[in-house]
Image (tube, rainbow, N blue to C red; front, side):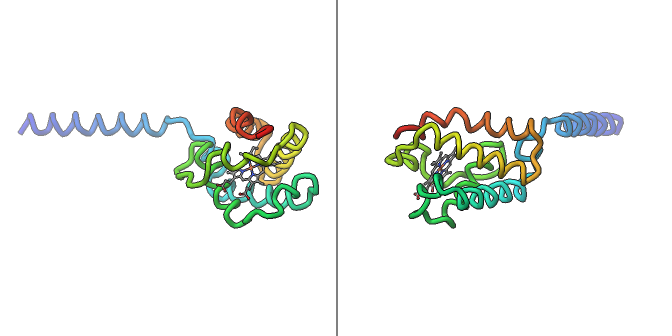
Length: 143
Ligand code: HEM
């Protein structure tokens, strides 16, 4: 009986320690910026920004925007550590043949920054998102 009490006490203690460890786990960037509603808001704002910019919109003239919206949300979710699966094409495949130059790339990044600001991201949060996307630049430029 004493052993059973001891064992239960140990098990309970282990449980408490695990809970404490879990509660201290750092939040993902996805959670920090507000999760699904924020990622959706960024994407919708981004699509708005693109539609009002003739230099960038010309790339999207033949794009299925419903698909773009879905894949961009998944992509942003996964890359900020959210619980999603990306089902779109690789960045290389999608942007290949578009011959995106640096000026247009930078303009698009500005549009994304506007979209993030409108969705309520703080300046450091905007930078953290850009930091995650920055390494993909090489897969998009001059392809
Ligand atoms: C900021 C970095 C960028 C990211 C993270 C990004 C991400 C994406 C994603 C996730 C898709 C959808 C993929 C799919 O449908 O399977 C996509 C499509 C597309 N992106 Fe980007 N993109 C970026 C920059 C750009 C730039 C700079 C341009 C052009 C100026 C551009 C033009 C396009 C176009 C036109 C499509 C649709 C292609 C189609 O109609 O099939 N993207 N992008």
